[in-house]
Length: 116
Image 1 (spheres, rainbow, N blue to C red):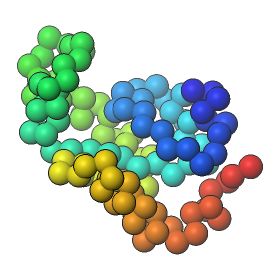
Image 2 (image 1 turned 180 degrees about the horizontal axis):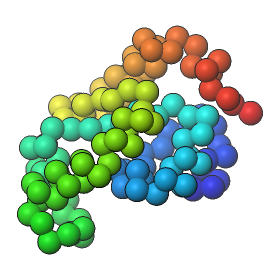
Image 3 (image 1 turned 180 degrees about the vertical axis):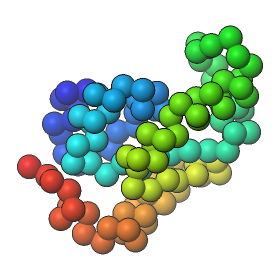
Image 4 (image 1 turned 90 degrees about the vertical axis):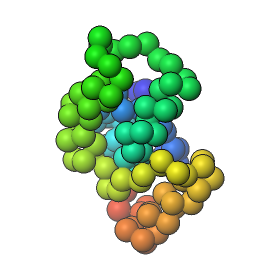
């Protein structure tokens, strides 16, 4: 993570749990544009069914998702300059949506960033 945080011109997908590691997340997001990628609950639950991961608690999946949202949403809202609903977006369209958001919100993003 230290090497990545010192790099420029990269896109990094941290995953929602990165919000729980404030020191690492602060280092990674310093001088970066942060986009919060989200999806509707039904989509996230379907993705978990298709690609199961180790359970983080004994809660049922829908309750676990609600717990995670409650735990992480405030951090995501504070750090992200935009939020993109990925529910119905294939990767290429997601990239286009992020590029459009940068263009719309920050016509000159490199000027805004503190790039070394």
